[in-house]
Amino acid sequence: MKIEKIRSLLKQGRYYFYKHALTEAKKDGIEPEDIEFAILHGEIIEKYPERNRCLIFCYLYNRIPIHVICDYSNRTIILIVTVYIPNENKWINFKIRKK
Image 1 (cartoon, rainbow, N blue to C red):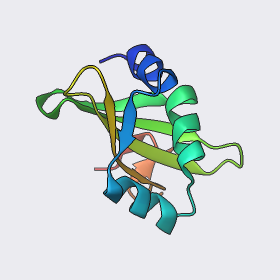
Image 2: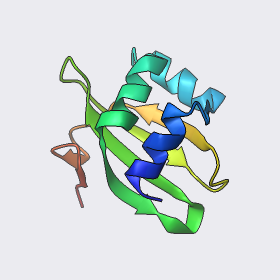
Image 3: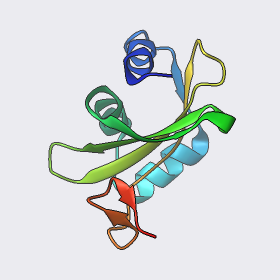
């Protein structure tokens, strides 16, 4: 699924948070509005077509990087699976996994 379709579903209110996503976000001080911002302004940096999921990266307004994993297996709604602040030791510019 393309980012434009994900954004369109988000704008239509056709999305849900997994409880896990909200729990992990809260641990990192990330609010639901931050997650919505990331989806609307971020970019897909990894695709997982076998699971109908993608990883979105965005810097929040305060320059905090976040990752959001979205599930689009339903095609009419987006499920926000998890959200976290990426570990800089595991990512190059928070976009490319270190090997």
